[in-house]
Length: 117
Image (cartoon, rainbow, N blue to C red):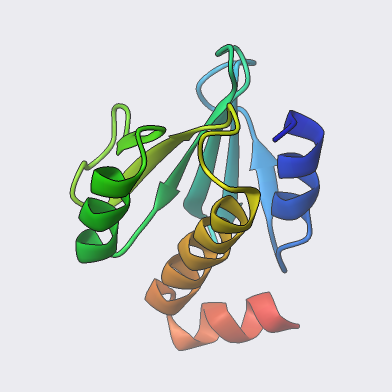
């Protein structure tokens, strides 16, 4: 999966904001001020770290070599996915959706309403 494709998917999320707090090599996407994706664009191949339900995170790691515990993140709740084609595109898209949904659910009701407007 190409960086441009991932960027389009992330930009399409309602209220998504792209930032570079860790330098130019890491695109950080937030919703409501909370991180839901980190794209390591300096890596070859590119990788993306996404929040995930802990049980699902473990299952995905066991099934796909390209999915590992989140790099420099809480390994219980985050996975890093290498975008080298070893993980199906549809699954990466589902993981992006899931990460975004987990973050939005964790926001206060006021912040969720603000995000939806």
